[in-house]
Image (cartoon, rainbow, N blue to C red):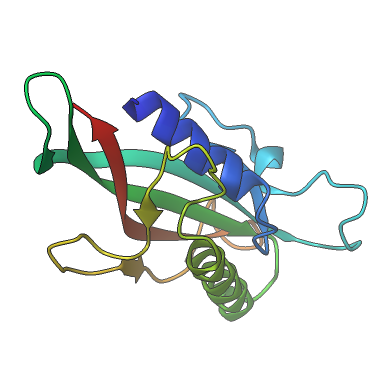
Length: 174
């Protein structure tokens, strides 16, 4: 397995998890993100939706631990990734309080999606578990969110930055 396969599995799962207000999942931050990528282009989306979120994946750390001995050519290792979901919600609503409320709905929906499937949609063992902490304990899911702030002055968009940290475990033969 590899970081790339785990990253791809998480991105694919979140893209299809029906997270409220989530428009785009990007495996890596782009140099430039067009403004309209924040807002859903789904023709089935309700008309007048004026808040949308982009999520970027960041692997903050990776650790390995031997969990099963198997001789010279087999055995198991637990690979633990600390993954940060960097979330940016933008809203054209007039009140920043409304943008903040949309951000809370987005975060609640995102955390619910993580809780809903501890394998992040994988059936091939790519992700043994996520959102369940590590086998040595620790936090399952950590959410940090900041105040809504206006971009480009009065009458423009409001942005809220949040980060969701989740432990992802992969079991490999090594």
